[in-house]
Image (tube, rainbow, N blue to C red):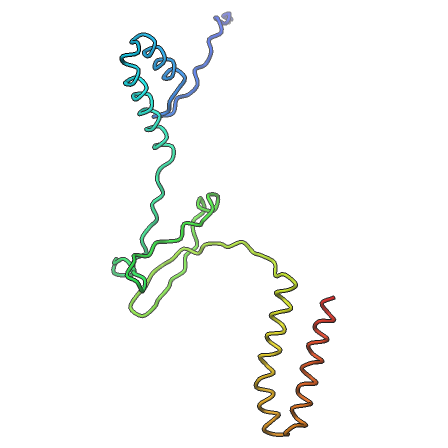
Length: 175
């Protein structure tokens, strides 16, 4: 077996992406700018910017939301007559996975919509207190009516003492 000595080191050219603007393109534009002189400077710059625009357009395609369609293929309109689009709030990472869908039927309309995941937010202690007190006061209205109709003032007093005790215990447990 014969071993051959390696030849001179040749740098590997970087792989070129179709439509990409390379360093050679920049060098060629600068060379043409220097060679042609100031009378053709605008044309050289415009040509280079055109190539750069093509590269950017190929790298970042425009986002076109999809129209929501019913089972007959007609666009779904809202109450104002505007065409409805699918939500575009899906994160880029989640867009790679197949989207979960939900079938929606409303009267004559039938559509399959993507389910957009929302971030979970914790409930603040204030919001928790307000919601519990709202439930307590919501229950107080019918209880007051029932107690007032059946037991008179004594029933009202007993119901409202119970409501106040529940509210105080709830507030005390939140500390």
